[in-house]
Structures are given as structure tokens and as C-alpha cells.
Image (cartoon, rainbow, N blue to C red; front, side):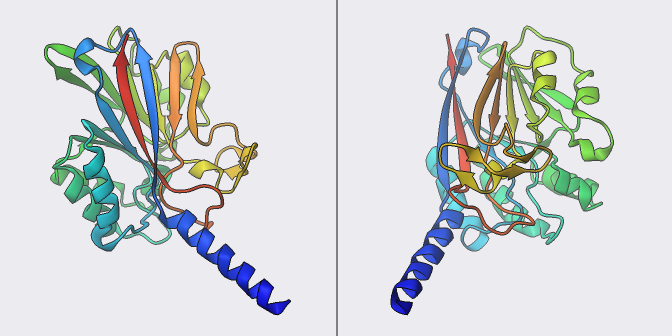
Length: 266
């Protein structure tokens, strides 16, 4: 009997290890008449909630996956570091290598704000060429056509997502929003944002087959927005399960992920 219990424990431990270190790729296709023809088939790679996790020496496993994807643009949607074990160099090891693959855009998560070192984090990223968006917008132009990118600062900075969205007028240009928090989905809908990239929920940490995530910050037990796509009116929100963990050190049925979005112009 003890032998079988030991074997079961070993199998469970191996399963948890693989489930917390193997990076899956979630592929999403987004179609819209507002997407300019020049951006048809463009791929966006979303990285979220690294939380100072390490995937190989100097993030080599993660970098190799991103190289294989070869995206047109990369979005980092917050919590690239963890305020409980703050190691900025670990994050820069990743960024320094992917900045040469595609343009990188970044917004803060709550953990960057919580370090009280957020200006240093932003400056370090800007120094290697990252587009750091602090309640700002940039126009991305290709073949004479444009899309708008908006970056929302995490509300731990003192201003709600709703307050920050008020800065941006509705636009005829297709609008991509980087914002760490998914629980305020209705705000993105109210301000007519086209496509929102979010994280923060860690996939619900423990995913129950058929039910979804168990708990998420800002949403509590059985959270609504934890993984995949959510739609209302003309707004689509993509929530990444993220890559790392914070206070809770393990995931269950919830592998770390990279999200790859392919844009399709109708």
C-alpha cells in the first residue's frame, strides 16, 4: 500500500512540475471590418504576468518559443516582475533578447507599482527600446494605414481604469488596448475599445475542468474573466493566464501560456 501511495505522490509531483514549467501557446484569431487590409495576418504575441519566473538560463526556453512564433509585434501586459522577490535583471534577460524580434509595447501591472521602483523599471525598459505606455497612445502605421495602441497604467497607481480611459476619444482607427486588469471589462465596452489585452487573473490559479478558474485577484472565488476571449457589443477582451506565480506558488490544470493573436481584415 505504501508503495502505491509513494508512486502516486511521485506522479502528482511530476505532473505539477510539468504543468508549471511547460509553456503552452494559445492561438486566437480576431476578425474585424475595422482592421486595415495592410494588417491582415499580422500576429501579436502577448506576454503577461511573468512574476520573475525563469524558463531556462537567461529565459532561453521562452526566447526560443518567441523566435519560433516570429510575431509582428509584442505586447507585455504587466507584472513582468514580482514585488515579493523583485529581480528586474531576470525580466531584462527576456526583454533584451526579444526586442530584436519585434517592436515591444509594455504597460504596468500592480506588482510594478507595488515595488515603489516603477520609474526605474520603466526607464530600464525604455533604455533597451521598449515602448512604455503610461496612459498614452501611439499610432502604428504600415503601408499608409493605421491602428491605434493605448496603454493603461495599473490602477494601483491611484487612478481607476475608467478615469484613465476618459482620456481617449472614440476613434475610427482600430484600437488595441493594453491594460492589466480584466475585471473592469465593462469599462472597455463602455468606451468602445476594439481589442483589449489583459492578464492579472493567473487563469484562476487552480482550474477546475468544466468550471474554469477557482480564484483571482480583484474577482474573488469563481472569477468571471480568467482565460481566453470575452465579447460584448463591439469589444473583445483577451485574458492571458500568464507565465508565473506570485503568493500562491503552483498552478493546477493551468499551464503558463503565451497568447498569439492573428488579425484578420474582413
